[in-house]
Image 1 (tube, rainbow, N blue to C red):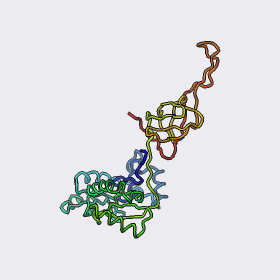
Image 2: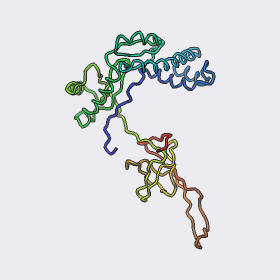
Image 3: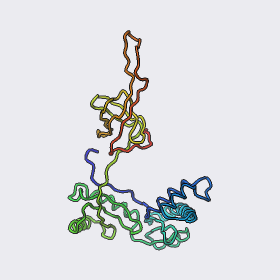
Image 4: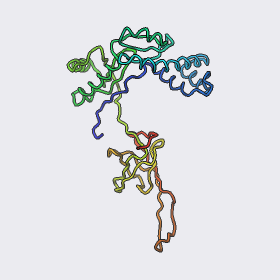
Length: 290
């Protein structure tokens, strides 16, 4: 993408609390004895969240149950679903919905029912509309991104250097373009989201200075493997989008010297391999390009 938009849309439908997300992920790493967390996980949670071993065991059990309840209710509530989070005070999963008649179903499933005005589908529709109205607008460079705050039942628009005048202008612009005021909140952001490209095995990776067309071997931590005959020195390597992926950090290719036709005198190396150190715009991922 040669001229990427300076803002991105964060994934919709996220959990309301970071703590819940962290513990849900950690709960998947519980040892084979499902009744008790592994010792290292328990110790980490005790230190990070100032919890006792008993509290860790109870929290992981409660939140593992919450994951299952959430999956059931998300499907059952359908278009009325509006997000979920773990309510620390109540010690249980909270599920938001937009139709009052669904309250009993949420309670019966073992979750805390929260009736709200806007559904997740409302946020998804508003997100698509934001892309349309901000792209190419006077506010384009000021928008850092947006995400759903499930607990507040709002789409949060993150704006760089948000002053009172800018807030009023953006709010007026949103209203003029059909974005309901109660649906969205403006927050100030000090950072802008950056576009990152994935590095996958088999993706094109060219050495333009030496006019060599090659491909990624496989991605590794910090970069990817490459064919040694595709470059050497500190050559720059470009990706499928013609953007620089990184530089050759090491290369090995067997140069062969012949004194007689077909009879090699020596081979410096028997490996055709290189290592490319990726720059900050590219992220190695454990995937293969089909």
